[in-house]
Image (cartoon, rainbow, N blue to C red; front, top):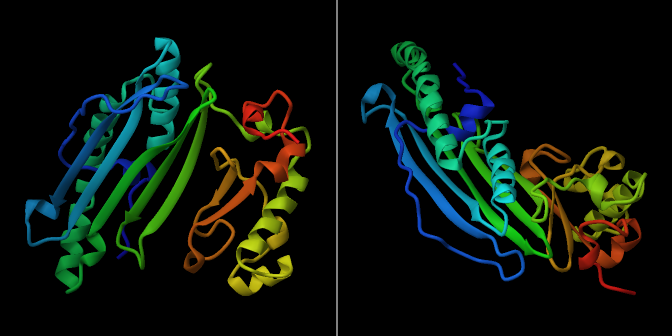
Length: 280
């Protein structure tokens, strides 16, 4: 019997709260944003019996706690919390959000206990009820009024293999708002950017032409488009495609780097990324 839990609970499942507030951590000289960390590590055994399968949880959230403007700090944090938990959790602080996900997840996981008991009667192997969920994030960029996060998830819920996902979040330290592709690139950028992504992907695998990507496991190469899941640094922009998004599980996560020189002509003059693009 295959069991499952909802996406929200899969990201936030925990059976006891292990939150610990850490001291102030880092300050960026440019954006002057200070961060703190909440970390929860928990384990729950099915039916409270240590001989049964268990759910292990490890969640770490690094989030802004102070900047030049308290209202902007609150917006930055809210965007991050929503992205981290996978839905709009409302205007609550990160520790509250984590505790609420724990409270809700307890009932969700315990709902599987009757199914577990039935399966245990009829099967020797009940390892499909072993759950392992790890969620964390990192600050990838914090300068030029830009703040970039990456959220990574590893989730095993009894299937053939664990699932992995990586999502990027780019925010404006000036307004607290999320920055989308449409704000970065000129109008009608998609087709030209798609061609550059495919070209970079072809070069990454040491191939001569894009058609050869099919031999590496990629299908429908001509349908690879920018997916709004990108991270920036001082040299360029990297798109991330998660498992199954453009290739099978065996290929894994695919990162495609585009240097600013290659995409200069696609970046708006008033783009938030414009200050990072080197002059000709």
